[in-house]
Length: 627
Image (cartoon, rainbow, N blue to C red; front, side, top):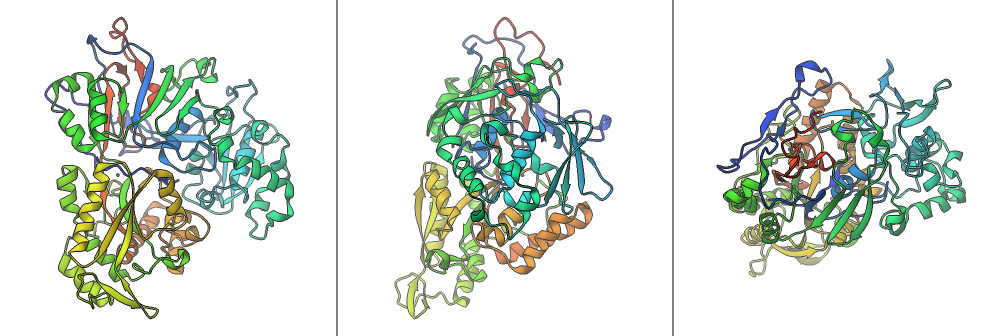
């Protein structure tokens, strides 16, 4: 599922830069591609060499401090959608399947193997592992799996962003002879019929549904468009309790999960602390994979937004890992031999992209119709000096986006679409054609709308607290001013920014989407239904024709046939210009050399914190574990 990323300029190609003269560069590794048919032939990651000598001054504790710029919207098991939330869940929760970030393929997590698939492509048979237990000692059971799926599908559950991914689940069929074996029956072929379970943490039924209310209902009930919630007071009562963010999303006493770490402290806006569970079920596994390791005793997520403060903390070795260093900041750090002596660091492009969204349906929130004409939207793109911004603020580390697919997905990317240039003259012409002209000589364009003269002066929303975001917004605003358009910049704190986007209460905003290597389901962001039902189509894009195309893409599991349709959708979005598509920007990764297994990955979050093994002066010569 798409996660709303924090915009941090400082997903396609892989970009590495020199890490300084004292830096042994990370090596690309293809991890035995020839020996496994389940390895993506394009899979690649950076395998940094383990340090062989201990440097005095390196910390010797087993606490890992990870730096980030934001924090989760909440930690509710179903009702949240921020990228930081998903990252924390990687260590506090477990899933039926998950991502093999080394090889960019799906891997079994709580199941013994990836599913066997029926000839018709609609039935997926799994078998649960038999070694998984909850914190209270209870065994993971099919009851938990069924509850987790039904809780996500329940129309009363406040997770509209997830609903498009779940609608094809028609039934869950249990095996009569094996209590751990089950079959997920799908109503139709769907490109993410397996991958979707990588975003649904498995919940303990007795913890979240003590009265077993959801057992009374079936997938068919929740798939029925005529299902009347109000006729089921037991369901409404359960959901009212379950949806409480203050309880199951923020109170650490109620954050239950199968992961090796528990959330033990959360100082909002500052830090979040995970503590390794004693006697966790994974500790009993004889030959643990990297995904079953839990080396650090504590993982502390420390929020720092200011670039100068981030660099200072790294220079003082107060941070162990960061994937959020500023672009210019990392360039500066890599010139410092002391930093290179203490840290591995690289610029790695990924699947995320940045954009500027424009409100195509402003009347729904009583905002003025600035961007309902695609000529105006194209003019806004022409007025955005993105190449200059890339050079000035981001040291040319980014790659321009043209439409809704990152260039990192080479086979899917429509390379016939060219980046829109910075062209004030052409933008002025389009604005004139759209009826926006300066009729009163005040250097601000205006237009008669419903009998009233409206000046082209709108609110440009950004997430506050980042100097680089503010500088980019200011530069775009300045260029728009040259064409008689006033973009008034409004910084918001993260919570209010999310709220405004979800409620479509904006004129224009700067945002980012976090994506993945798996085949894309465009419904969450680009289908018109995802504007109406609380999904992530914040701008209101979509027509019956594009909706139909999106539905066809979702159902087409043949890659060659689907890619043709995906390229067509990219061309339509490019023509309609609901976004000013900005950049695929590199993830800036720094990992302290005191850790073994310091590898870096294209797939989010770019690191595997639980697999980082702290060394000491006495253990550093021991070889890192291999997987």
